[in-house]
Structures are given as C-alpha cells and as structure tokens.
Amino acid sequence: MEKFTIVQSARAIPSRVVTNDDLASFMDTSDEWISSRTGLRQRHIVDTEDTSDLAVTVAEKLLHQAGLTADQLDFILVGTMSPDTLSPSVAQIVQGEIGAHNAFAWDLSAACSGFVYTLSMASSLLTTRYERGLVIGAEVLSKLVNWEDRSTAVLFGDGAAGVLLERTTAATGLLAESLKTFGERSQFLTAGQQQNANHFAGTLKTADPYFKMDGREVYSFATREVPNVLNEALAKADLTPDDIDVYLLHQANGRIISSIAKRFGQPIEKFPMNMASYGNTSAASIGILLDELREAGTVHAGQTIAIAGFGGGLTVGALIIKV
Ligand code: ACO
Image (cartoon, rainbow, N blue to C red; front, side, top):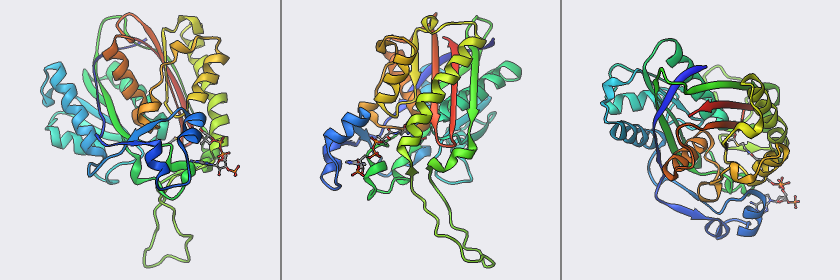
C-alpha cells in the first residue's frame, strides 16, 4: 500500500452557466438530443479566466481550508489538456502565484485520465520522498472547442478541482492501480494541433486546433477498457466489486457509467454522477465529483473508493483508494 491521506478537497467553477437550450439558440441541436445521449443539461464556461486562474483558486482554497502556508508544500502537480501556455505550465504558474517557494511543479497531460494519472504520480512521490503536495485537475476546454461543430461543442465544460495530499502512517492511500495507454488509437480523440510555420517548412497540412472525436470509438473504448482496468486493480488489491463503497468515474456520459455499473452488477447509486451540471471537464471531472461527495458526506474516512478515468491518448486508468 502507498500511504497517503486526502487532507482537503476543493473546486473552482466558472460562474457562467450555459444550458443545452442556450446552445440550441445558436447551433442545430436540442436539449432532448444532448440530455438523452449524454446526461448533460448544462456546463460552466469561463468569461476571461484561463486554466491557471481556476487552478490558483483551487490551490488557495486547499491551503486555506487546511490552515497551511504555501511554503509548506513539496510539490504541485496539475493534470490538464488545456494549459494557458506550453511554458510555463499551469502548475508552475500556480506555484509562482501562491508563493510555494519550496515546491517543484509540473503539468501532466493525459486528457480525461489526467486526474487519475496525476494522483497516481503523487502517490509515488509521497511514498518515496515527499511529505505534502497538491494534485489539481484544471481545464478551460471552451478554448479547444470548435463552436461550429455540434458533435463536440455540446459535450465539454470548464472547471477545476484538486486535493491536498500528505504522507501518513495511517492505513490509508493507494491499494492498487491499473493505468493503460493506447497511443495507436490516438486519432479517435485529438485537440490542440499546432502549425509549424518555420522558415524551412515544406507544405504542411493545416493544423486543427480544435477537438476532433470519433464519439462511437471512444464510447466503445470506455465501456470495454474501464471495466478491464477496474478489474485488474481490484484483483491486485484482492477485492471484489462489492468491496468498493463508491465508484468515481470520469463524467463524460451517463450512459457509459450506467453500462459499467451494470457490467459490475453494482447498484447505480454507487456510481454518483454530476455531468448534468458541469459537462465533461476532462481532467477536472473526478476532482469536482470527489469534492462534492466529500462535502455531502457521501465519501468519507474508512471507505474504499475506486476512481477511473478514460479519454484522449487514448488513455484509461483506475485507482483503488482507502480514504
Ligand atoms: N445535436 C443534434 N444532433 C447531433 C449532435 C448534436 N449536438 N451531434 C451529432 N448529431 C447528429 C449527428 O450528425 C448524427 O446525425 P446523422 O445520423 O444524421 O448523421 C446523429 O446525431 C448521431 O451522431 P453520433 O455521433 O453517431 O451520435 P452518438 O449516438 O454516437 O452520440 C456521443 C455521440 C454522445 C458523443 C457519444 O458517441 C459519446 O458519448 N461518446 C463518448 C465520448 C466520450 O466519452 N468522450 C470522453 C473522452 S473526452 C476527452 O478525453 C477529452
């Protein structure tokens, strides 16, 4: 077991709400189409904030809630596919803004598996070398959305959330994990291509900065591979699906989550969902859900929870955590 404790959680959600009907007012879609296929009813979209603004708010809340100062942090890891800039990374901007002078910081890019992969890395750091760090998932996906492409524009939202983690001697932390990457299938979900217009460049294909997704491929990938990684992680932890108190899955689509719950023979109540309120916030979604569930008391000390993400890369991963 890799021992750590989730000391605090926090989220930062942009105030502007965009409903399905708002989208239908300027693109050929409907609340019925969106909600019946995905479970989404609304999403939050930034005004002028960028990804680091949301991440900084999360970091400040975490420190405030814990009664800590920024120089007590050893590291800051941010999972994101929508950084403000390639350099500095979002984590480095956060480190500078909050004045975490003793912390190193970097971003991890694994799309909608970002929170799971980042939490896994943090678990290793805490077990081997460090005392305390922040894991934040932060996204402003609205800047990667082609607002003229209804097949992707209706799916995504902006937001951020994170956890403050500490090394512990208690019997809490990571029981087991399974992380997998399928780079050979990366074409099914791409975003953020950049044009190389250097002086020496030949004739280049025009780069597409926006989301492109084969929804059906990603759907079948998720319904096949999430159960696989969950089963592998459960087997490593010597647990059965019944031993998990709450399953926190990436909030992309209610139908995907329902089908996974059914596959495991588990009641849907063990798979809480909030995509109706936030849309798919990629690396932020599991953190937002975790924070809401901790706030509501649905996730609490003593439980065993499973966290699973899936998405661009293609990537998938599951962690079994004793809270
Ligand atoms: N409103 C109305 N009609 C639409 C819309 C829309 N917003 N978008 C597409 N349509 C139409 C299509 O044009 C198509 O029409 P046609 O049959 O006349 O050609 C029809 O609806 C069906 O389109 P599909 O794309 O086949 O719809 P599908 O039933 O597969 O649902 C969806 C699409 C919701 C995207 C689904 O495939 C899905 O959820 N996939 C998984 C996505 C996912 O989980 N991504 C997570 C990773 S994201 C990340 O990593 C960042």
